[in-house]
Amino acid sequence: MINTIRGILFVIAFANSVCAFSQIKVMSYNLLNFPTGNFQGRVDTLEKIINYYRPDLFMIQELKTAQGLTDVTNMMNDLDYGVFASTTYLPQQSNQGSTFPLQQAMVYNTNMFGLVTESFIETEVRDINRFTLYLKTVDLALTEDTVFLHVFVTHLKSSQGAENEALRFQMVQAFNTYLSNFMSPDDLIIFCGDFNLYSNQEPAYIAMTNEDNSLYMVDPLASLGNWDVSNFPHKEILTQSTRTSSLMNDGAGGGVDDRFDFIMFSPALMSTNSPVYYLAESYKSLGNNGDCFNQNITACDEGNEVPFSILRSMYFMSDHLPQVCELGLQVELNSASTIDLSPRARFKFCSAHPSSTSPLCVKVLGTETINGSMRVINSLGQIQQTRSFIKSSAEETIFISSEQFVPGVYLLELVDGNEVIASYRFLVIH
Image: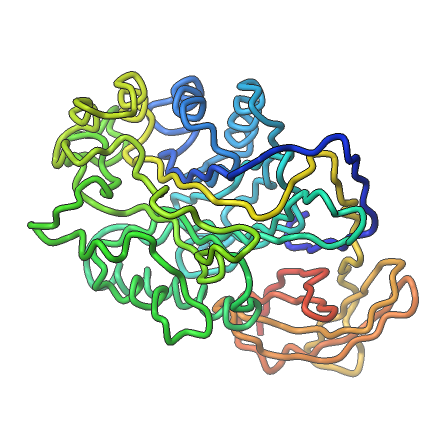
């Protein structure tokens, strides 16, 4: 399913299976080199944290292996509070020369959601992963339409210094370019992950929250001010580090004194008039009550609604705290509503055209008639070429000249209306 958006073909729903969901619980968590870090065997530790909060959407950073994602999904299913599936594990595609690749992924409650598509935005550091979900609304069988939730999970470049700030800014620019090209102001978008931001004055933070953008992100805690100043009063929103010193030489120390981790929303998702919306004041840096600044997270135990046993689990699990919030629902869900996600089209590369010096030969396969367009996008999310495309047979062949493209990685997309129904990543070498 990687890089392929699939079409809605048919819907099955059973009226007697309506689920009385009132909210969606969301968690974003940097799992620290999971599961192959120096401190291994942490699934049981994570299980305690997951079972305490019980998220319906679990967005993961610092995932190292497909087996790690499988282990998390199986663990969540064993807790028996939902039926969970994961997105596809995709090894890091950006910056493939990296000696320390990390990836993002998501686990979701299939009683509430179905997965429409998964893709990624390529950057100079690591991928920004995109997942589009549909809500299993009760009227799906009648309307053949539903609510879509777009989730972007990222891990921006770490560490201080002008060079690292510039790399974080470049990653956010790629994200913003993608939004301006392919997303609408009405879209319901979550942007979350380990942003590694040191203050709200960083160019990356300003770029993603700039209201002059055609589409920008809202930080629900922005009104609290700059978290990096010494007299910042709301220390309960800080997210890293859970430890004063690293464990097993893995992860950062220093105690709880930085705000690196975020969940942000598109303006549409902040509106209570939307079918899905952010529940005000539900955002928390889980376990941080503000009383453990520059200390271990376990020092936040007095008067904390989070039990000490969970604080202790978070201390051992990662050097970051989980970020959690809730989304309200204006729609009724039905866990039996399903969508058949059969591919509408797929790409297959073919031999070069003899009359062109550097052609890209592509076969478009699939049984469906398509009247749309092709577009080529560079690694910054910028459209390099667009052309109309009609497919009336099971196989159509097209040729795209690559001479105009500088060497690098590109994304070829097949678009029908506003929907990307197939995509393929290719490399140009002159």
